[in-house]
Image 1 (tube, rainbow, N blue to C red):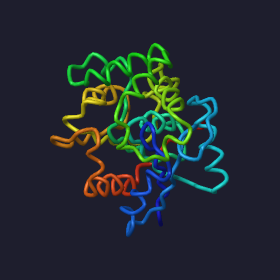
Image 2 (tube, rainbow, N blue to C red):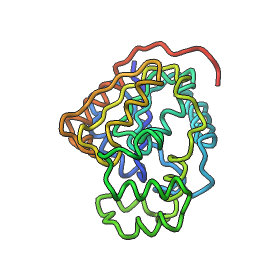
Image 3 (tube, rainbow, N blue to C red):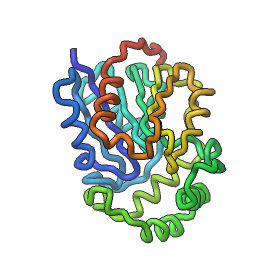
Image 4 (cartoon, one colour):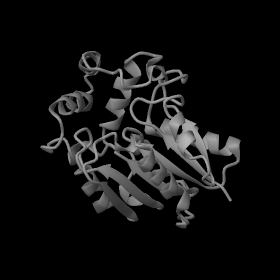
Amino acid sequence: MQTDIFIFGGTPSSKTSLYEWIVEAKGLPCKLHLFERPGFGETPPYKRTFAGWKESITEYIAEEGIQRFAVIGISGGGPHALALGEFPTCRKIVLVSSAGRYDSFINSPALSDSSRQLFTAARAKEKDAIIDQLSKRDLSTFHPSVFNYGLEPLADELILIFEDWPFCLESIACEVVSFHGEDDTTTPLVVTEDFAKNIPHYKLRVIPKGNHLFFKEPKHMKEILIEAESSRFETSTSSL
């Protein structure tokens, strides 16, 4: 039986930028579902909240007739994956270079100065300052499709990610496995300490000398996909 795996990309990402995951999944007994968040790729901007995100995923699950699924959350997609932790049909969450709760890492010496400035502006909801900082960065490493609606959706998502999360890590019923680079300066390894303390069924896999984008290497992408596909962890039967 194939496993349905949802892919939530980083901040920002698009279905086009995530297509390489489909390439690496060939031969595995799984079906990948690529998702875009508001204002990324071909998805029009609209007010983004974690509640709204959960509602859209609930609608998608119903439309597709999906019984159970695993989800891979990459960087800024990590919190969006964790927001589904109370779904009774979510059997596993795999985090990849995941963003953490603001207070868990903002003072870490491992965090780069540029990221600290950006995330501090996001926490303060200073949208103009965020966009100003982003406009001065080299964004050429991102697929052009992620900026179809400009930089404003990216600023909006950063603000959302670094607000207090409206869901409890302690209430996540499924297994959570985190792949994190040892030398990540964008979301430092220290964020995983907060996950380990508060998520009931949590495992950490540290990538030696790995940076924030370690997962771009095909061997790591394959490992992550196999992890998402292989679990038979039984989730809670509690309702949302």
